[in-house]
Length: 240
Image (cartoon, rainbow, N blue to C red; front, side, top):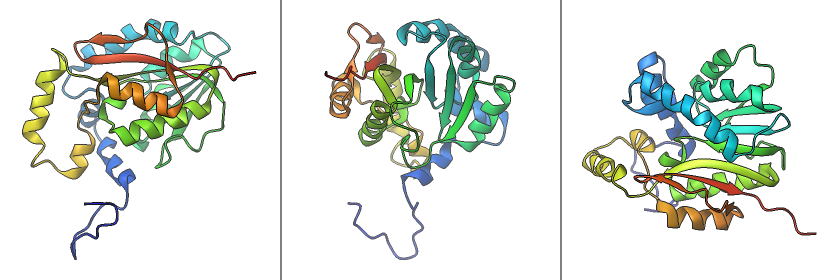
């Protein structure tokens, strides 16, 4: 089936991939937490986030002059903690309900702004407007086309020398059992629910997509935790 293939008469199909992002909308605390961390207990999730603040700051060389963005900012807990360390921070998310929550979380933090990602993969942001960016548990849900589209836009919005930290999935002792759980539920899953499934692209594919988008892995930055991989990419300095 291709993008040109007509659907059956009377079958209601999403108008675009963007329509599938409804999977990230929620209307109660339980729905919010499931979308943030699956069924990981909330206290464990918050400890994990708190423990990553210094790692992110170090990997991205954050300082008081840094203009920073976060893709998939969720409820804004990372933004609230990182904002005092930087000049500005943009929370970007496909979910309007999460952006509303992030606004409440970051209330009183004047250097935090908010951006709704529509079907444009950051195309609405200005060229070379950020020094660094990051995304946690976002790219683990994206297919190769989406990863490339994001990375291409990330390169564009980063200033030369800028860095982007994210995580993705490869096969390992932690992620292999998760993969087979998704295999069991995939055949009968609703198309919108599939949008929230995890994606096992692997390190080789991710590196090739980064190169295609014009980004370079920072040497020594790959950190593999049983198949949950963290990587920092860099936009190289422009040639003289």
